[in-house]
Image 1 (tube, rainbow, N blue to C red):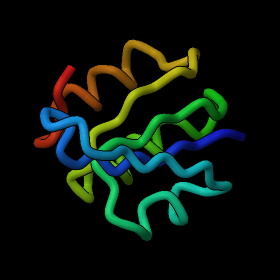
Image 2 (tube, one colour):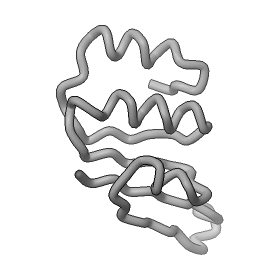
Image 3 (cartoon, helix red, strand yellow):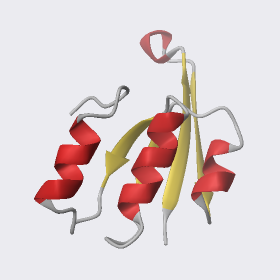
Image 4 (tube, rainbow, N blue to C red):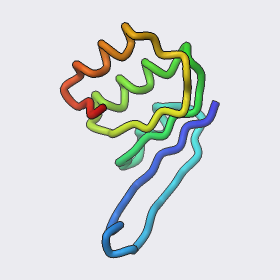
Length: 82
């Protein structure tokens, strides 16, 4: 399982980017996080995406296996941006 949590600040000013590698989605979202990058597995990725979106965190998914039904559910989430 690989989850990366990124805190982006001052990107336009090229100041800093914090990138943490964590073991769980809860750990990733326990710190201020702008983007969750998920490289886990198809059987957990949808829950990770929904958990992050519920907290207002954008998600980049590097995992395959989401179904058309999963995408239909995700695209209708209020914070989704596909």
